[in-house]
Structures are given as structure tokens and as C-alpha cells.
Amino acid sequence: ILIGFTCTGTFQLWLNCAQNFAKDVVGWAEPQSMQSFYAIGTMIGLVITALLTSKIKDVRFVMIYPAVCALMMVAVLMAPSQGILKVGAFVLGWFGAGGLLQIATSVCNMLFPKIKGTVTALVMIASSLCNYTLLTAAASMTPSGVMIMNIVLTAVGTLLGVFVNMNYKKMLEAAEK
Image (cartoon, rainbow, N blue to C red):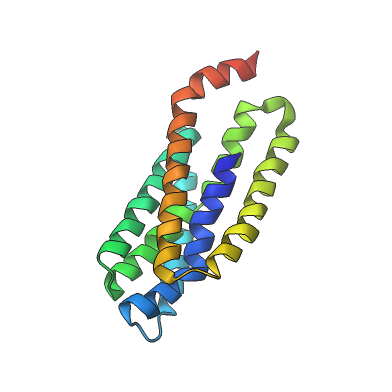
């Protein structure tokens, strides 16, 4: 359920704050083209992820996708340029917004099959709380500070994904009982 918070934070902070980072840190006067790269990444990510879920367990994505996002944001923070920001926008679109929230919900439903509606509601509540709390916090931060907060948040999401993956078999067995 907490992954609903962290994965939403990953893509919402990027979507709402990366252009400010591009302007302030890189000096990119009009970084709006990043939105196109983000949108293309999201669309491709949704299609490819949908295809991959037929071959790879859903639970693997809640670990791998945030890890890719965190590494990409570290690259953006360490070597900021227009090129890396364009790549970052595409990668965050794909791996951050390309179906991860839906996969987290799907995994929760697998782990709690008797209360699917409740679990789905809890994941969506966590997502909504994230939208309010993190964007409110980001409003008073520097663009670099927001990027660091997003990296930390996404790293926490990765650790949550590792935890779920390590305990998935045991949790799934308990759910079947």
C-alpha cells in the first residue's frame, strides 16, 4: 500500500518540478519539450509493461521500476544537461508513470484477494495523500532539493519493492489460506 504513495510521488514530483530544475540548474529557458519525452515514455511504457506482465511476475516491477527511476534521477542530479533531462523525462515517463501504480494495486489484490476493494481504495488513498503532501512540501523547496527528495522517496519505494519481493511467496501462500 505504501508503494502507492512512493510511486505516485516519483512521477508527480518529476512531472510537476523537473521543468523548474531544468530552468534553475541547467539554465534551459524553455524546457517544455521535456513533457513530450515524458508523455512518449509513458505511452511506450504502458504498452511494453502490459506485454511484459504476461511473461514476468507483476511483483518484480514494483522493485525494478522504482530502482530505474532512482538511478535516472541520480544521473540527472549529478550530470544535469538538456540531453540528460530529455532522457530522464522519457525514463521517468516509462518507469515512473508507465503503469507502476496499477501494478502495485494488482500485487496488493493478489496478496489480499478477500478484500480487493478495500486494498485498492487504500492504495489510491495513499496515492492521493502523496499528491497533496509532497507537492505542498515541494512548493517551498529549491528545484535541487525537490530532486533529492524525489530520489530519497523513490529509493524508499525501491526498498519497499525489495521487501515485497523477498516475502512475496510467503505472503501469497498466506493469502491463499
